[in-house]
Image (cartoon, rainbow, N blue to C red):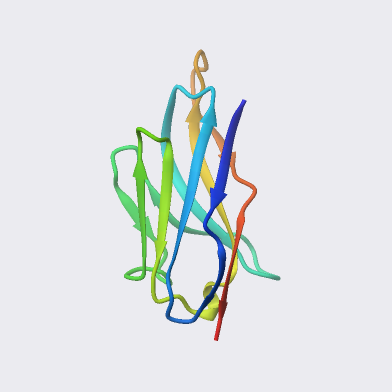
Amino acid sequence: QVQLVESGGGLVQAGGSLRLSCAASGSIFSIDAMDWYRQAPGKQRELVTSITGGGITNYAVSVKGRFTISRDNAKNTVYLQMNSLKPEDTAVYYCNAVIKRPGEPYGRDYWGKGTLVTVSS
């Protein structure tokens, strides 16, 4: 069994900062890409940022320069530092990771349950 658990969401004023964490636990052989998605009310889930196992990052245009993704491979954890937050960043933020379990030939997608970020104007 593999679990992803997000933490760090909350209410913040526009211009403020939050740091999200997502820890993977369970029977894990390796973790490839780790991503953050978000889903605002009434909108589709969108990819915010991703980081490969080797540390290569990619960002949505809307968050570039404000958000930073990082990972601690020893802790199986990915982080999302969010600065200069805007009301339009309000959403449930989900962690996603491609995880290979022992004995499996390939990795699979796993999702966390999400953490709510609310940015007030």
